[in-house]
Image (cartoon, rainbow, N blue to C red):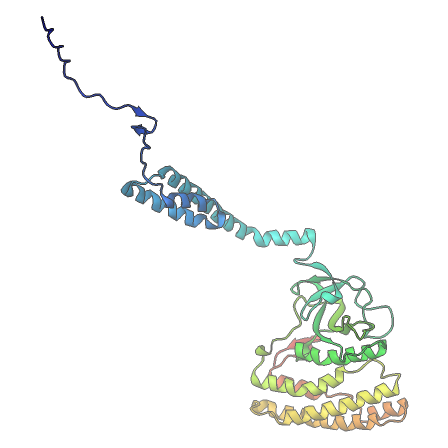
Length: 380
C-alpha cells in the first residue's frame, strides 16, 4: 500500500494581525489622554465679562502646560485665550472712551431730560438734607409766613443744582393720643422745627434770605397714621446751588463755643409765630422767651475760655448788650396791651444786638456783612 507523501508545508510568512474593529484590537476602547481642566475653565470664564481676565490667564497657563503633561484641549485653550483677550481689550477701550465722555454726556443729557437724578415723590418721602421742588409752589396764597403746603407732590433733586427748598429736619408729633386740632399740631410743628434748624445750620447769621415752613399731618388718630413733621427752608427765587447744611468742623474751638453760646438767643428769636403784631398773648409769650434766651446767651458768652485776645472785649460787650435787652423783653412780656407792649419794646431805641454781634463775629473771624460792599460778606 502506497502511503501518500505528507502535504508540502506552506511557505513561512509574517503572522497575520488580528482584526481591528472600531474600538481597537479585539474590539476594546482606545485609551485617550485626559482633557485639560485649565483649558475648559479658560473658555468658560472668558465667556463671562466680569471673569474674562481670569479666563485669559488660565488659557495662557493651559497652553504652557499641555505640551508637557500630554493632556488634550489645546484648541480649547487657544479659544479661551482669544475670547478672554478680546473681552478684556474691549472692556478697557470702553472704560477709557466712556470715562472721557461721561461728564460731557451727563451735561448734555441734563439739557434734554432735566436735572440729574431728579425724581418724582411726595412730601412724606422727604428726609433731612433732601433738596426739592414742590409741584404746587412753596407757599399757599393765604397770609402768614409759616403756612403748610397743601399739594404733596414734589420733585427731589440734587442740592448742587438749582432747587427752591431743602429739608433741614424731621420729628414725630408728641404723644400717643389722637391729635385733631390743626392749630395745636401747627404750634407743636413750629416749636419742634426751631431747634432742628440750629442743629442743621448753627450759624444762622450766614443763611441766605429764606422762608421757614413745615409739612405736617392735619390730624393724627390714636391708632396710627403719619406723625412725622418735615421742616424745610425755601425761597421763591431759589436757594443757592449748594446744601445749606453747615459743617461744625469748619470752625475753630473759639468759633464753635461762640455759636453754641448764641444758640439760646437765636432759637428764641426764630420762635416768633408771626402773630405777635396783632395778638397780645403771642407777643408777650415771645418776649418772655427772648428774655430767657438772651440772658442765657449772655451768661454762656462770659463763660467761654480761650478766646483770642482781640475777641474778648467785643464778646463781653455783646454779653452786656444781651443782658440789657433781656430786661427790656421782660418788661414787654408783662405789658397789658399791644400799645404798651410796643412802647416797652422800643424804650431803648434799638431792638437787637446786631452791632455788638457784628463786632464779636469780626473779631472771631466769622463771616459778617460788609456794609461798604452793598451787603456782601467779608471774613474777619
